[in-house]
Image (cartoon, rainbow, N blue to C red; front, side, top):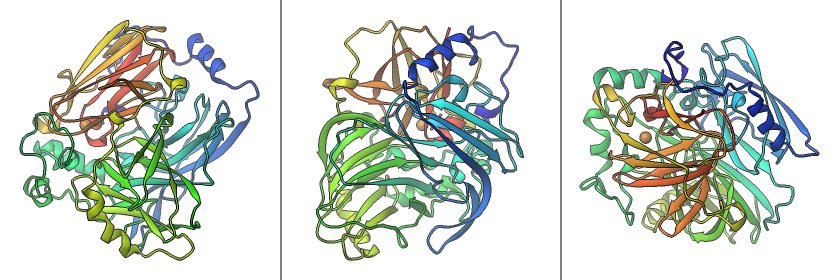
Length: 490
Ligand code: C2O
Ligand code: CU
């Protein structure tokens, strides 16, 4: 689909800084730490049988694991990751959130050729910023089959106060269980011009919905009925497991756990919380925020959140409620005694009623706040859809790799996302971290931010990483149906 279709090479587009240009190489030299170590990993994308917790599926994964095995490096280090493509299709890897060199960004045809079936490709890059990241293919809807894994970049000077870490990757399960292929689902949606029943923008009690009367509180049966055809979500997953057979994490009372939460779902936002245990949110999309307490936080597709909790005396679940769906996932913290999956089921409805912290409530710490500066250039991105044949557009146009938003190195760039639709659009920018402009001035540093229905969101970034960079909706189906464009250094 869009991202993997060879571009209209003949069409006149913005002048390009090729990935191999001296500007890209110079930027890469700057982001390497003086003492940079190098980590090598081998990855295999392949078709495997996976156990979701008593539910066996055949699907696509990295190395047979769901999620794929975590990669962990230190800030400034080089990562050398050789991908062997054992899939029946071409693929690629995108390192979501990293301000890496453009030719390692994993976007066919924009930054590299597709990695053909049966071949290998080596990604080699420096990781300039610490944080919670993840990786996935940037070809079609391959991500939705299970090709995703966390990438943790540690900060050697981080003074955060916690005893241990728990990385949790969330997913929605459309593929595999019922034998449906996500690419086929998308094709069918487009063919029939169907509106995909997509409750991600629906019920958010206590949140400002702007202009979407009637959407809040619509029963799930209505949202999933009728037009949804065969599109069903049987499960949502936490660390590859369904809610009745959850992953467990050994701990003890009083231990401080740093949760690193990643939403890898293609089509589902989550509310995350630990019943009865306040979370201290410390990072969003890898970047530090002024610590803030929350019982529940919203996590859009592609977003990450780090939060510290203190383990109580009794076992407790980390719960992830699928926004607008009657589904949840959990990881059980064992706290001495073993946890019971049933406590999650009992706690989910209560958690759903608590006020939700969103990224707009967060503020970057001083050291990662951009100095005040008015933008040198502002690009407005009007987000609309679904159109005929399930198209989603930016400024009335579907993705075209040769048509983008021109910017220049050194500029302060403002992107203004205007959501004219009735769905959530978690908008993601490659190769940069932007600063959200919140109600109270400059907010969090992020690479993915939900734009709520009927609202606008302004984000600013520094054009300091030359190349061709996608910005797109991280609802995988919206992105692939056209809601994607290129920020292009000219
Ligand atoms: Cu995870 Cu282009 O994105
Ligand atoms: Cu979207």
